[in-house]
Length: 201
Image 1 (cartoon, one colour):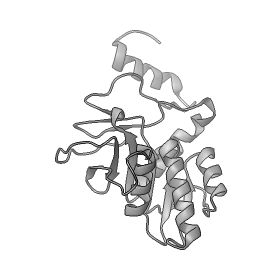
Image 2 (cartoon, one colour; image 1 turned 60 degrees about the vertical axis):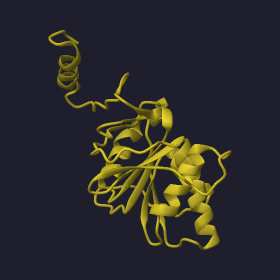
Image 3 (cartoon, one colour; image 1 turned 120 degrees about the horizontal axis):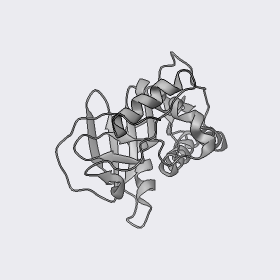
């Protein structure tokens, strides 16, 4: 989860890109692609064209828009428009996509400097720009939630790509919580107390 500060209101297009620098901003996507093209594809192209520069280390997100961005990034590298870009995959899916499109990879470890990261968010709250990730994951991706969160957190700049309907006035529903096995019962009790008061787990 990433917290953001609200910015000036604007009219939304069908796809929105949220970026994080020191302060968070939100931008409607007005890409040069035709309106018939998928909004997430437009968001992906906008993200790569406006934020990725030669020589960067890029956190490669996971999801439909991230797949489009990885594919487009690979095309830009192949055409020579970008060079010396290294990807740090957030999941097996993004590693596979990056390898397929010829993006050199470096695997995440503590201390890796990441210049920029992009990722799909499940929802973004309108006023706070809090982003929820990990809600629509498969069971194979459980191990990647911490990696995704860590990469987004250490990146100098990060972008979340979402559809307009994922931009919410208030967040509802499930919020993914990863509990490591060490001392899990105490953490479960804390979560339980937050939502159910004094009920027991």
